Image (tube, rainbow, N blue to C red):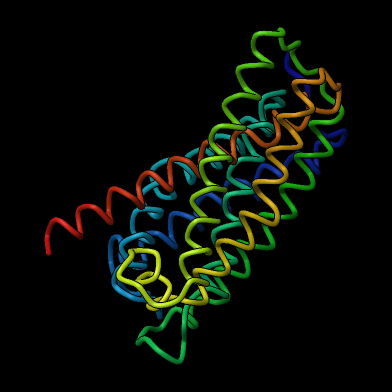
Length: 256
């Protein structure tokens, strides 16, 4: 049964508008960047830019429309709206912090600093929408998850995040071991700030949170159900973005 995510019609309208604006600004960022118009260029290496383009494909064609759909559903009072909203909000917060902090402004040419107001707006919208969606999700009766569904979701989250953890830890070990011809070392030399930023965000926040949710599901904890609805959308969007980045990197390597 549908219900309004928030009590007042005014606050529901504001959240709906915020989600639609978030989706439109995500699309604007993707269109202005190297994916489409190339008006905004980033102070990163060619390899990092190829990864960025892959992520922007997901941002433009999946994340932005999903945010707009969540906004429309929120205004209509759908109980599905908070769950849909959390994915784009968390994804946007994760990505646009990297857009500001990750580039090496002193090393590579670019002009992405002029887009700082856009990224700042996206970041503020992301965390504010995330908070509203989390509060709304806590008030909505969530569908019961069967034991099989719990185990499947927990296994999926554990496998995905263990793979990422081993990949990131392996790359860190390679870097700490010193100069080599490995791809991890070469990537580190080209984009050191971005290298460490991605790893601290994933190993320090995203992966531990995923493990907590997965363990909670396996232990049949009530709080884990709310967390999995909140977290799974973000995980799936990130997997799609990483896959798109890998494809773009492979295409770039094949072209050279």
